[in-house]
Length: 488
Image 1 (cartoon, rainbow, N blue to C red):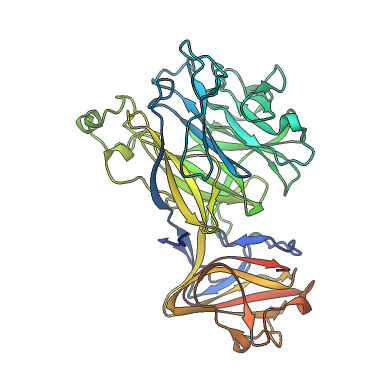
Image 2: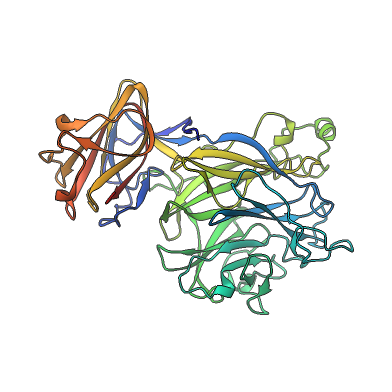
């Protein structure tokens, strides 16, 4: 499997300590800490945080069945053991009343090659020979499932979901196998009257169990100040939702970031670091028209769906009502050609999943409102959403104090043949610790997902366990994606 690590020119350079959020101390041993924000960074000199660019891997699933079509969307990818499943809305026309919409599935053993099972569960067009798991007017419009990782979840509720619009409210569903669904209760669990903001509920409204917060979280769409915004709510049982908050945006230094139309938010615990929520959101640019009527007609796009554009952005959250928007630029830009520059295309599917020992994948809905509508795959190296990048001239990164856990420090990194990374461990005041000084550091050269940092006397750090330390990385022509403190 190839190693993937392309980065865009988007960069934020920090030169001063004292960021808005202080780092957690005593992080559990084995926890991955990706460099996706400035949370753990004290200062940088000559290096910068860079957003990485996913590799285009092409179309993987055509929405070509009669009950699917050009208006299929709101996809969710669930990785369950050795299996993958894609859930998505099947919709063949632009009809906006929610009638005739269905929830479809496709299955995969690797997240790359997909098949549509003949399930025989739901009758559509007089036949059960299809891949449909739900067909409820209004609720199939944006049905968004999750694999419940709550240790207390009953076996017959291993899968849960939310579905519904402003007229129906959000209805909760449960399932033992992810195929046969039933409502958790007759009434919706969230209605517009419960939300202190103009509620829409008309896009993908997701939920998940947060191991970091010990509760269920839902992120859903509202329309505040004439802008598509995101709200968050909490629940202990997936039925009673409380603490409804409007999400805010901050840049790398804790200042307010621009408020843009975000059609979907796709917030999720990162599967390698579930204390960190990532969001691959769909940024919608209403009225930003690229195609002429003639160009739109030539590709067969519906006449109502070519006068806006959209792309994908990347945000993070470490709990509460704030998204970190360290990176304001696009995470996945629209591709080459007219088909990629129509309304509501390029919307990311929910969930980034591993698709190899060194690779993870994110998926997008492409060619919306067109005969060629499909699901598209993009790949990244593990932890490779962003990196600390050093140019050929070199530079350094110093982290904020943290309590060391484990016996080794592992690096996810890539260098050129001429580049390298050296690591110095300091005490909390910034004084180098004997045995782990820069002069004693063994330079890391190569391209690996996980390699232990080494010093002249080896890589064993058990003498530092439980102590508050700072990590200093001196780098040249290199990218540092993540670190992990672990026993082995």
